[in-house]
Image 1 (cartoon, rainbow, N blue to C red):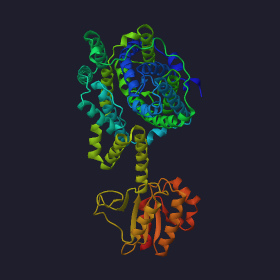
Image 2 (image 1 turned 30 degrees about the horizontal axis):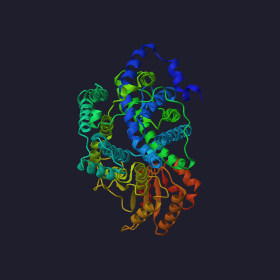
Image 3 (image 1 turned 135 degrees about the vertical axis):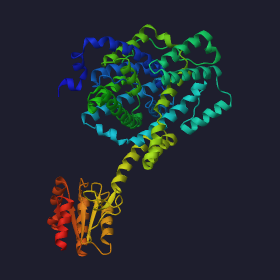
Image 4 (image 1 turned 90 degrees about the vertical axis):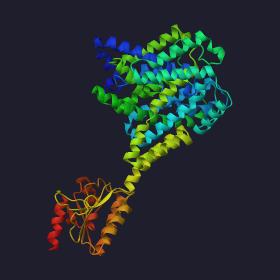
Length: 561
């Protein structure tokens, strides 16, 4: 494989068009106005110092520019990963309350996510994104949005709580408000910032609402002396480029971190593939799933060695970059350079950034994550999938973020097996005015031929549904008068495993003892080859395999006369 396949940045640099430069630089500067406040806010959402969000943003943007295949995707700290990171590191770091330990744990977590992502790319495991079905992903994201919202309300109101879990945090927030812990200046500032962000996103989406809210809040804190009124601020940031650091942790913590990294990897892969696909459609480019995972993996590894934490793609930041005219990953490089200049030349510029505004930024992100419209659509269109979404939502809300992702994956897998265990089954007949043979449930007046039953089983025939198939066929054989032939319309049978093969052998012998023949029509050649390999034709008559249902029916008519 050529180096440009695994290092797309080489090809991007060689094919870069000078005409793109002004647009990429402009888009990078616009993007920076979003990267800085969101990076700091999402760092605190993850239970880490705000500065780590800026470190993370710099390194992941630079690494993805080298190893990422997309021209426009923007990486960085993500609101959907923040609670997962916090759920992993806070219980471990809480024993001594050392922020440096939390940073080290988050850095190792990023390294593990990077290793898992890279391994998934090397072994072409992009299909793991399919472990989260759309309904369960929808329920998980809505549960996550509610968890983030409730968790940020105390900061918006100017106080903090020590509760764990959605219900505990909600109760602690209500208790704090009832006991008078609200700081009026914090609430006023945070609520005003949130209204500005939401209003501009709704009515003037091209105006940088977050930047306006952040700048306005800093000016208000400075001019009105709001620190003296109880408003907490970020404080001075360390000066300079993030230092290269090899994080040190206890070996005993590695198992918990690895488990959390697997969950984060799954969510990140799913988000990356869906976001990359959405923007690829707009730009007419092709999604390279495995290379995307390699790019995200490199970004996480880079962040992990510079006091960063796990990252993913961001649909909202990518949209901002595209709207600003981004043409290549130079946009991200410009953003990383701008953040670096901020830290080197003016780290004190953000010292009066109020914490309630960071809470407002996160709350606005949580509201954008929520998708109640799709939940309503599921309710109208398919109640079973709505139930799956609701169960995934409750898994996050009641059990927590990490158990919630496990619940979501389990529900997705069980839903697949449910469809295999109990697939749709149909008895077919010939309906007047329609060619072919069709489901009697849809055409109750369809004609059936005496002594002949046409049966369709809409799934591969495997161990999970072999008993269901057998019971259905035996039920059909008990009709009065009993049929002479039971013809399986086998086109949906895309596979037959050895368990199902043994079942078919026994079933054929049982039906033969009753004078009933088991017949197959329209069986695919690869499945027919397996029938021969299993030597099922020792019991099932080789002449009872027909290329079409019509030929099977005609053969029955001839033998019945």
